[in-house]
Image (cartoon, rainbow, N blue to C red):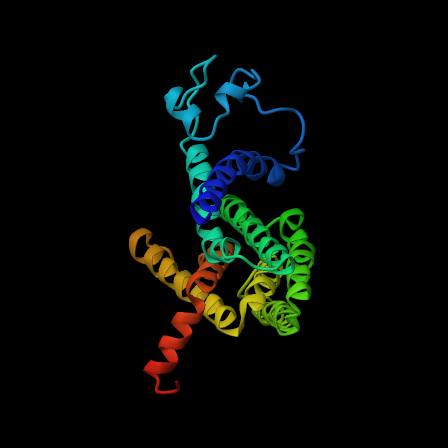
Length: 273
């Protein structure tokens, strides 16, 4: 059962990754993600279904348009593959709970949690791509995260009667947004980062305080390493603007996957546990 869930999540991720390529291009440009259909920017021929199979079509076409031979950026299969992998990773913590026999309420709650974190995986990929491209985190993608997270995780918490998780989810959202707002006020962050931090705080807070703390600590640690690397490799200065959204999201997944063991290990190292 676990293998089936992970394989299904991976295939679903590949399919959604193809759509995320459209979102990453059209949303920053203010275009509809629904119509018109995807077309080659060179010859304007609509992309057929056989040429829109995630990963496989790009390989079979050798990275070029079937009609005009225009090169198709390698970024497209990379986003598809990254989303497929992200969905498998997101499903790992929850697949086991769906495999074990349980009462219907618990099964539904676990399903809601799985869907919630698959959703987080999807917006993580597309927001990271957009922020790296444009240094923007569009409200049309970020803000629905509050509603989706509250609905799915709220439903799961109610079904489990785990009101502590609901409390830490709300606290995490408010505390993370407030902390990042202070950084924004003093000029250290963009306002999009404030809103994204609130969404991430909601999801991590639902899992627990260790995941919340580790997730945001990891975001700053990874962001610092990346920033130092840019200064060394490309000669950037400390005043160079660096998109922080990808590192908030990277930290979030470190918190999801390893927050509790990392927090426990740190406390033991400090002699506090």
